[in-house]
Length: 386
Image (spheres, rainbow, N blue to C red):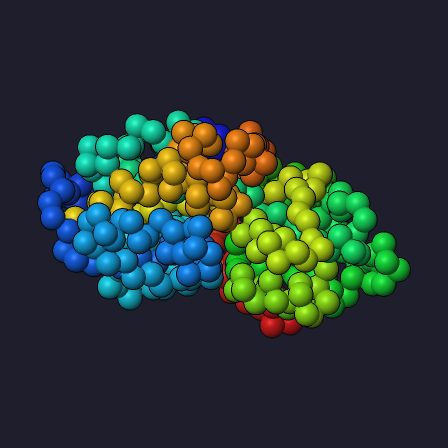
């Protein structure tokens, strides 16, 4: 997915940042000392668990006992919320997806890490190590954490067979139960969802010439926005809170939506009649990085967590809980919770098929003009309000 063109585009877009980030790197830590007693993390729901939801899933308590660093977590439901929280300060680490990480780097809210202080760095999946969503000028702004696809969550009572196309949430139609989809589908409440619509149109309307859902010219973008305006008439609710979406599938008659494996796992654990699939058009996805705040207040605890987060058992347990793929391949054989087939089930071999989130910029990879993320934000707000 992350072709050389994309790497070049990222490099060009962020070239101006390198002098100031180099200065940050020069002042980076050279050793890890005693912890400061606490650690403040902004994280996706389900990413930092201490056994409160399920006692089997706890990778915080042991860390706190071993290091003396009390972990405080602020969950964020969208990448935009994460950026806002980091802009406000007061956090040491953030588990940022690709549509937030480059914005955090550009905004000087995160700093390069010293990988020599993270012994498990050499365990990271080579496919992720130099990901252009967190690597600028050869400097790594954090450690990879988890990755995975944005799946199609559906009711197995409504769909006896898995839907083969994302059209079930984008186009007006009757579902197999004979009832229309209007009011029974959801879409993600975040501008990056425009890429999901673009991904669908890549296959649906090849004449548009969309090659990358994050690089859209004006004509392509207009077609994508038109599709989303039509979808607005179908959507019962735009979701961003995973817990709310889980409840909507239980009680509000929602039967199909874009989702994360986390919600799928939660509903299945509650014996609800749901399943998930990646339709024929493929899927967008996320590769998340634990990033170090530029104004980190607890750097020793932060570096201790960066190392802890790459422990194969922790990685495997997170993947089992969230339904994601670990950033450390050794985790595929280390976590009893994930099991022997967990990595395969969660999509370890689908890396090249996922179109990973990244922040759209004004320059396409070939140097032509693209619609920048600022437009995505204002236009998607208008779509949802329409």
